[in-house]
Structure formats: structure tokens, C-alpha cells
Image 1: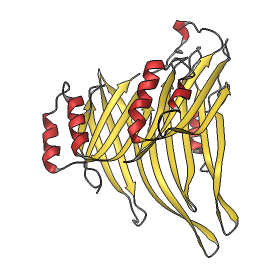
Image 2 (image 1 turned 90 degrees about the vertical axis):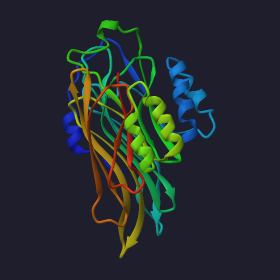
Image 3 (image 1 turned 45 degrees about the vertical axis):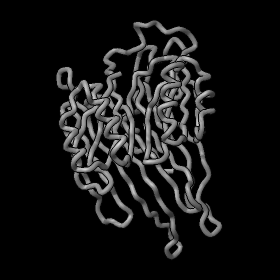
Image 4 (image 1 turned 60 degrees about the vertical axis):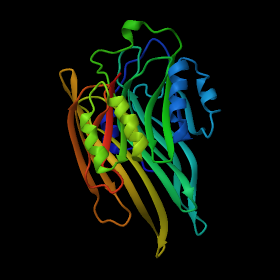
Length: 326
């Protein structure tokens, strides 16, 4: 597995004060068909305060658990690490790559709540010598104690993977202390990358804040979905999201990794009641020496689907993006 970036660890390793109550976090990575994403989110929205909701979700068609963790105070005093092996790739009788999940998380909040930054690296085998990899850095959130919350989302045109978290305390925390001094609320970022006809793309300019939801439904029914993603980011702090597929082969006894990646880097900036988003999306094809990139910058209203035209990608020419404050 790829290690959590050392630079990220250096930024996150903050000495934490002791709390008066013991905190527990549960993190679950789900695998599911795209057709069940809406049902999963609806189940957690309706019964998110029930720890057993995860059991009900796992009974939905095609939904399974890729990996799960339940830890008490994993981030107390220093960055916490969670890891789980999920097999490996063997070539010519020798293990060439270990696969699994690595997470680095830290809570910088002095209060009873969890003001947490999470880094995630997920790898699992897809073919005898191939694997998928999902990564997310700078994923910040002030947790709502006792409620399941979505932390990250990776999806292509067929399958999805979701990371859900449940943070709990051994006593009822004081409502005034669920956020520490200086805590800054984060923003949930949701993106859909689509390929639409030039005629349909032009019609998106007619969408208004009041009709953006209907416009997305209309576009989804006509365009071809390429990628979806979801993650949290705190304004003013960098974040990144990555989806990759890779293949291992031997070349004169040495392991060579052939990889195709799509990744997004960027930040959000507060502009009064609005948010300025600045993203750089890059696609690195297996047979290309250099990646193809697109820059997306816009000042938007939170909670509204915004549409941007995108150039440079063969499989997507429209980005639908919505930013939702905590």
C-alpha cells in the first residue's frame, strides 16, 4: 500500500489535550452499484442516529463492506493510524504488492466534539495482477456525535465506494463544547463529470438557482456519466481526491506499475456568503507521457448545483458541482 504522505503527517501531527469523556469512532467503506447510492444515503438520512442502520444498509442489493474499523480515541495526542490488509498481488510465486486500507486521522479540537482531518488510501485487487486505488487528503469535518456521516465518495459509470463514519462519546457531551475554540466548519463537495451534446451543454446556461436541481436531473437523463466524487474540505485548506487503476508486470525481474489516474486538487475560499472554488482536474492515461488537465474556477452559492464546461477530456465536457456547508 502507498503510505500516507509524510508532508500530510507533519501538518496533522498536533498534540491534543485530554477530554473528560472517551470518544469512539467507527469507519466503514462500502462497495455498491451506482443504482443503490440514493438508497444508502436515504437510509442514513432517515436513521443516521441508529448505530444498527449500517446493518440495514448492508442488506441492500449489491451493497457490501470492503473494510471497517472501530477504534477508541484513535487520534488522542498525535495522529492516529488505522490499517487493514486486503490481500495482495503475487507474480511468479512472490508477493509483489500488499493491498488494503490505510487511514491517518487527527482531532485538533480541544472541546468534546471531533474536529477531525482524515487521509485515506484504499487499494484492492481487481484482476490477478491489477488493482484499484482510491485516495483522499485534507478531508476535514466537525463530527456530529452519534450520527452516521458520509466522509468520501468515489464512483465511475458503474460502481461506487463510500466511506461512512460514526463518532460517539461515553457520555452526553455539552452542546456548547461540540466545537472547539477556533473550529471552522467544512464544506461537502459533490461532483459529477458528464459527457453531453453541445446542444444540451448550451441549454445549461438557462439554469437558475431555483431550477438547478431539475437541470441536473434533465442532464443526467441525457448525458453519459463518467465519474462522481464526494469529499469534505475546509475553506482555505488544500484537499485532493484520486481514483486510479493499475496493473503490475515484471520487466527483467523488476516490478513495473502501469497506472491510469484521475485526480482533483484544489481549495475553497470564503467570499461573503458565497464560496470561490478553484479545482485542477488531471487525467493521466496509461499510454500518455503527460496528463491532460482542466482548471475550474467559479464563485458559487452553497447548496446549488453549478455547471461548468470542461475541455481536454474525451469522456467529460461538463462538471456539475455542489458545495454544501456543514
